[in-house]
Image (tube, rainbow over all chains, first blue to last red):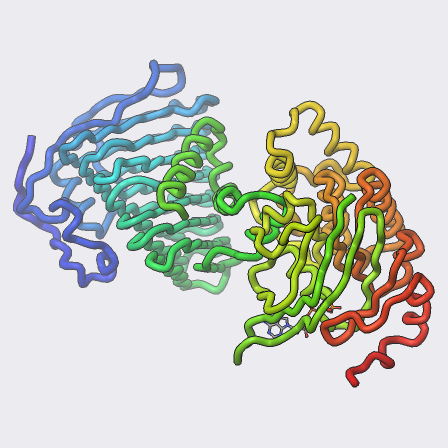
Length: 362
Length: 250
Ligand SMILES: Nc1ncnc2c1ncn2[C@@H]1O[C@H](COP(=O)(O)OP(=O)(O)OP(=O)(O)O)[C@@H](O)[C@H]1O
Ligand SMILES: [Mg+2]
């Protein structure tokens, strides 16, 4: 079903702070109510059902979003989507094997909403694998209930034409731990909002990410951690490699410590490695603090070129140039990639990166 | 038998306002089994000599030649020099985050030997070499040189030398920063490789204490970018006593 609704949200023009980096011409009308987008669900469970969780499709009205957003694409898809996929992990379930969700958007456009509920005191990890060359606007809302431990991994392994506008928003309950790993290595234009809010004390979030952009790719990650509750913790660490002319990445790290968020402990880091002169990485960490009663708050951001000393050191031991470069790049990503904890996936991602580097002759 | 021949070597680096000449005509021949100690004041160009032989891109050779068994080293890429049998233990070993020591050693050995070493024998080989150099087994999972103490970095350099089995090694202040025990352990490592491989050694140092363990056949005094005096082991003792003042630029 497709629909054109009267718009109660603003169509971005590109002059807004939130959109100033994004090439709006390339987002295929996802932001423009005049262009209709399919309401269709292409995300599904890979493998058979197992104990401890349940996946279902429910009416959107039965599962309204629990958070607010200012993002106009997310606002639009919320108003247009009629059905929502709900992954519910049972209270106290301990699921060792990751729950794998695959999404192949094919060639058509799609608006999609997904809700993941990690029941109280459950422990699980969820992997969302995105492939194909489609156009998608999506929101995944992750509700991490009291005492739950959830690892949430999204792999943007899109084809070269894909357009992906997404918000992955976690709401973290009392004493709950949320860990996300966001990997973006494919797609023509990807703009993700990995965002976090806390609903109760003692909760923590770790947001890890890495992105790899080549010729003409625009990969944008806008992290937002909203500390509105006392004694919550957050760690953000994103790393990017850019290779080839016109490779473009944007990383925004907004951390907001509200007046009542005493005892907050936060640190965010973004590092970019530029392999080509024609590549551009924007990195904007931004810490806003309304209370002085905190444990710690810091940020760091670096963007640098390849370290010739490292290359020389490896080569002086007989390792050829290309292999030395591969080792250094793998080394740069390792810290984040190892967090995935699945060697087959880690190896698949690294070999995709390797083969792209090879094609580029980088 | 391997022979490294350095002739009339002149080297400059790119400074803020143009090229700066650092090596001003170095002549030196090192044969397998020989130990050549090079001693000289800070800034005289010892590391520049070492790096130039290894092919560091920062240094440009403007005159002279370096050959290994008659083959022009200066035309080789950095990795080709290692494959030809040259090894540089660096004064300041480089940290390579995210690359584990074990992965690094295996990759280097594979490149130098032309094929991956057999897993079972290789693991044993590495373990044994590490234990001889008193390097904790946990180091193999750490990132190369990252967070290593000064002494640990130097031991790690000699570990590589022991596993990669070069023909000619340049040890740039490998003794600096070593405590007495480490100095002995590292020296024994060097002597082991020397006797097993008939290694030729260029030993750059400021102190005679390492020369008590690794006996030099020749001592060269390096000042102002070239060798200004040569002699036997007794020259080292004289230098320790009198310093380098007598070699101050004429
Ligand atoms: N980029 C550069 N610009 C200017 N001078 C340089 C540059 N690189 C090296 N030099 C100079 O070259 C000279 C030789 O340096 P080198 O490191 O070879 O000395 P060294 O003999 O190894 O000293 P040490 O005993 O302190 O290790 C020094 O005076 C150094 O400052
Ligand atoms: Mg030096």
